[in-house]
Image 1 (cartoon, rainbow, N blue to C red):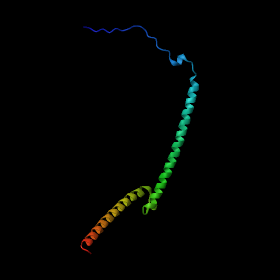
Image 2 (image 1 turned 90 degrees about the vertical axis):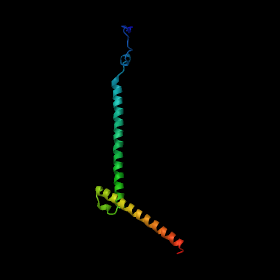
Image 3 (image 1 turned 45 degrees about the horizontal axis):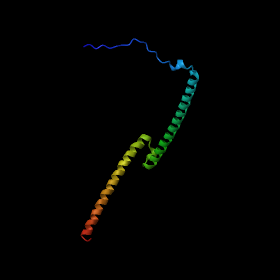
Image 4 (image 1 turned 90 degrees about the horizontal axis):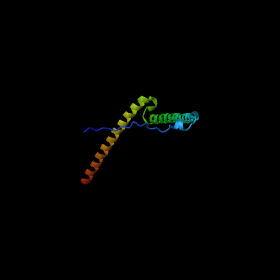
Length: 118
């Protein structure tokens, strides 16, 4: 039970290539394509530069705002400002927690006074 594969030795003709079928001038096409690509690249790079400038201005404005919020921030450099900001946030959180504890304590004291008629 041997299987044999039949192979065809006939030569197939390949379809003509597009470049041989139609004689086109590729230099004009390449020139136009290069021009479009260079125009697109130039417009992208210009917008990238504008975006970077806007980003830098936005960052500088935010740093200046942060310097006005954090006590002593106007005297600090950027790195020290960020460290001081982190410390300041932690201090504010501690103050908030202390106020919450005090208000809870005072509310309980008021409830006790009301129970005893005082």
